[in-house]
Length: 272
View (tube, rainbow, N blue to C red):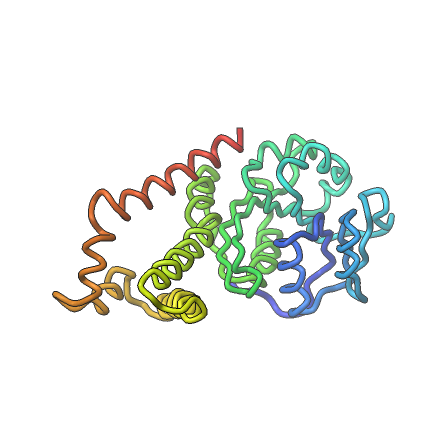
């Protein structure tokens, strides 16, 4: 789905934390109509500007403000105490939730009635507009509302859509949690380099740029990851020697599979 031109319409952003702030920054790059953000933290006032008013709670939202979308970017554990305050917008807008684990049914129950809800799972590369977000709409979301949410999410990276909400649990395990796996790889490579005698500053540089550059190559290439791996692996060479360790059936493949299965299971537990 392709983003439309023109300024992004008025948005009510509930929560200006790491992800909410990243989304806001992306919207501003495209032009944001005068909007409102709700966040009681003193640090949130740094986001204020001609296009955005910051208020401490829902009661302080200007009475005439009519958002095209309400973006729910609060911590999932705060949903029960927070969402009922926004039920008054349910008849005329779409709710875009990036709260991990909170289901469409659960959000709807807190808002009352059958509001239009898009549940989405972004990831932290959104901060540099390189995120991947998967969205799932409720049956009550109209085509224009889905298009608006698509545009809001495209402002922070690539967007994919699914109809089966249950897939958001493994999506969370793969892409939502995935940046941590990549950062762990860089961390372990850096430590291993130091163990082989490379100075710490150089070890850090090598690990970070190898991971970042390989990711950029993967993103730019039409080849499968396996083909790219094979292309850099000469038979009997250093890479093949390392991969023989990593790809042992009892090593990396099973560890990654078990890790993603564990994260999927935990996502389902958090959803109740």
